[in-house]
Amino acid sequence: MTPASRRVLLFAPLGVVAAGGVAFYGMLQGMRTGSYNPRGVPSALIGKPPPDFALPALEGAGKQPFGAADLRALPGPVLVNFFASWCVPCIIEHPQLMRLSREGVAIFGIAYKDKPADALKFLRDRGDPFARLAADEPGRVAIDWGLYGVPETYLIDRQGIIRWRWAGPITEDVLTNDLRPLLRQWA
Image 1 (cartoon, one colour):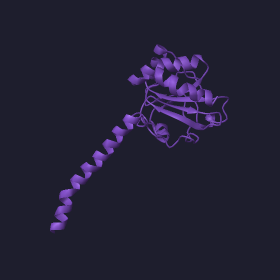
Image 2: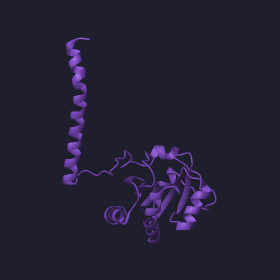
Image 3: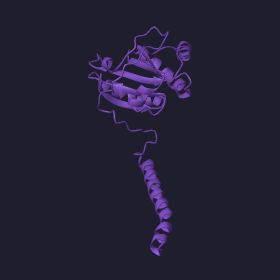
Image 4: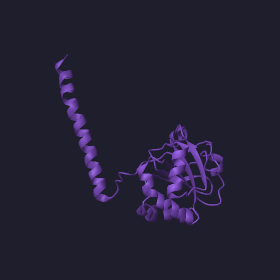
C-alpha cells in the first residue's frame, strides 16, 4: 500500500463524519426556520392517480371492496386510510375519522396485514367510519402505494388524483390545519 492510499484511508472516516455534520447542521437550520418537518415523508404519488389495484372486501364487514377504478371520477374528494387493529396510532386517529365520516367525508379503508376478525372487532369497538372497506392481508397493495407504516391516509380529488398524503395518525391539529383546508380546496 502506498503512502498516498494510506492517507486516503486515514481521512475517509473524517470525510464521512464531516458530511454527517453538514447534514445535521442543515436539519437544525431547517428546524430553526420551520422548513424541516421530521414527519414529512415525500411521496412519488402526489399529483398522480393511485397505482392500479383491486382488493377484496374485508371478510365479514358487509361492505363493498374497491380498487383503483373506484377512485376515478368521484362525486367529491375521498380519503383512503390504511389501518390495522394492532396499530396503536390508529386508535389515536380513529375519533377524527369518525368525525369526518359523520360530516359526510367519504373514507375508504384498507385493513393492512390484519386478520379479518381482529379488524372487525377494532371497528365494532370504536365505530366504522368507512364507506368501503377492503383487505390487504399480504400488504402488496401497500407496497405499490409506498406505505410508510400505519396509519397512513391519502386525499384523492374528484378526478382521481392523489393530492395529499399523511404518514401517521390524523390528530386534531392535523385535521384542523392540514386536512380540512385541503378538503375545502378539492371539494
